[in-house]
Length: 470
Image (cartoon, rainbow, N blue to C red; front, side, top):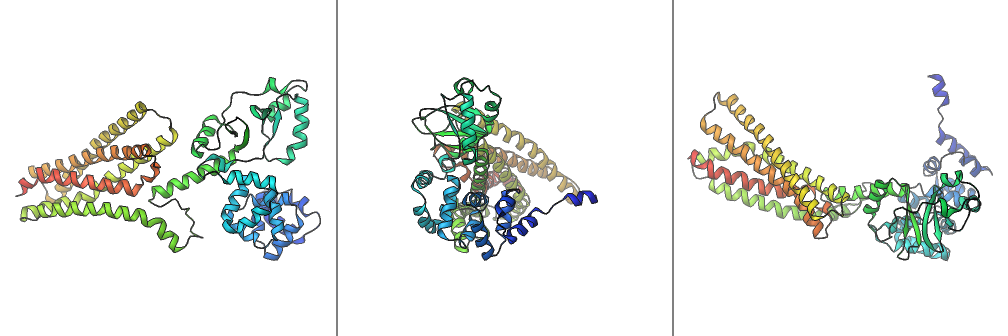
């Protein structure tokens, strides 16, 4: 145990000590550590220490550090650096990372963008032009291409000379003129014979996407094909960028956050507890809450309607009180099954965007069968619970009690079946209307389910039980 403790090193403390010493070979010594650890130390430095540090390291090394920073962390550090230094750092960053930072800086980023060299600025502007849900907004220009006419020996020389200029060399893309012809893994290039031609050893069957394609679709392609990168081509089949596995993780994280906010009946604004203000929080939540308030008013109207029917005499009031006992349970179960079905359908539609009508019908029918099965099983359990409760509280079960238990369990059966089908149907309808199915949020389906469940429960009770209680 003592040997283990001796071997454990506090890398960040070592890094901080090196930075504070600020010796001439600082960057060389810091290159022995992971850049992420360096970035974590840098954000904890004092303003004068930050300024001194970035004066001591190259723009390339600075860019690597910035790529590991959150946008708010980068903004804080930028405040202590001269504009000329920031511009050089942006020029060395991957285009997608530079775009994310410039977008976050908003108006403060415009002067920086204007000072970036024309070639890099053109690339950044190209990425900026894409919508946030398009894969082009995430593409990187840091990759290697090899001409199809090259030999393995020539390709190895090309890789050796240019590898330091790019971040991703695991896969190299083969071009014929400007068009994408294939790809070659670095491992295959290393083991190939020097006199072989690239066109003879390259792979020609591979997925490729357009920059305007949806980011979720591209992420699914990468997951299904297990590719570590995907080429992005224009309409002329010319490679304009790539998407790598780390971009994939960013996309998945972004999509999950977007779906979570929608599923929680929030707007698309990012959940950021530290930086969100009161006005933004209210604005993001109020629209859906207003819609849900309107739907909840329907629930209140239904209850008011049935209250009038159940307030005529003592028997009606007794029935009303007994119905209220299991109302929360029925509403809760119906809402839960609807939310489950909703989540399953959203996931299905996300992973099967090209599903045809027969596949959709099959999935809907399966959800209906699931709802019927769940409703039957839960209904039986409710029937047993109601009778057991009656037996414990009253000591005996009368025929009226059996009828009441049957109505309650039957209402649960119908409510669960309908809610399950509804949970599957709403995302499908929204997809047909070109609306993100995640908007069919948990609170929304729960509220709609409450309306239907209340109507079913009280209607059946009024028809079957009210005459028996009068």
